[in-house]
Length: 211
Length: 209
Image 1 (cartoon, rainbow over the protein chains, first blue to last red):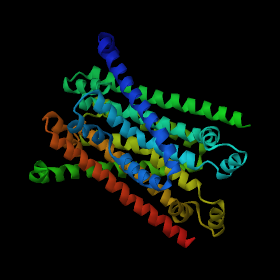
Image 2: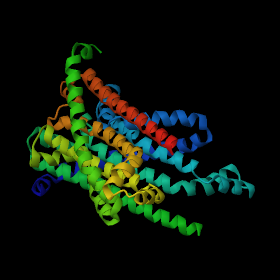
Image 3: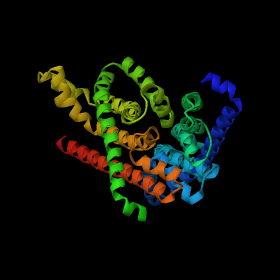
Image 4: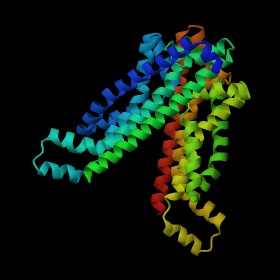
């Protein structure tokens, strides 16, 4: 494995950077969509139930199915892979954003309104900060899911570390296959640990701010 | 849809292979996960260690697990089931432990007072009370395993993923879509039926309480 990486630093580097790019773009899009959408849903509870039902079905769809269904719709490559990964990561963050905001103590919101805070101020100063730990847990879940599922993007020409695995398998190049598998496993574990660490830091900071 | 209509027998075989993979994976996961979950509910330190190991296994991408199992176990049904079990342990152990820990100490005291032994208390009182949480864990496990089993076709374990991969290599869009829709339908059907079992169990418990 090490020898294969040493002999093919270019291929390995490209695979890593493709994987990070694909996951990064997808995660950024998930955050940009899920946060405002989750917020909007708390203001429209009727719509929220329908949205949650749809998201719960989406959450059940296997990652490989979600990726390959893009083939007839968008073809192969980076874009269809990114779109599929966004759909795959969205449920976790959307549900957490919504639940986090809904679970904020109604008394606290009421008290803030009583002190004359506007709707916008209640949202930015009370609701969002209090829901932040739950929201961040959603970001962590989405990040790990996306990095993991991005491995399967290789099947629709999306590149990334999965490509080392599929190419290694096709050419009976086992060092390449193992290099890809170990790298993506370590990457997923690293993302999980890094986001868990960030989450702990954030929660501690929020608690200190509240005290 | 013409391919699916003409080849419904192949589709059924793939579905059967898929169900068999998940069935074997689930059975073995429960066989290992239940005792570990019970032990975890009693011993917090052991629980922490088990969570770390099974959590790490759960985080590793499916394709990587299959690839890494090739040099060790080779290709086919066996290694695929091993991978499915690796994915299931975290959720089963966690839900069994959570379900057992959530039981009110009063109930346990009452069972002890009635002279229930350790094992009788576990099987007659604790596990039945924890059942809804355990079923919830089984539900997540089955949905995860249906998803991971799709990728198992990569190591020649068959299943609905096989239809997808054949479609990709043959550049035959309909097969890809049929395979993807079939796995999704299977996952959604499993999720919904287990959800109903969970709801019914909770309702029954609420009634008897």
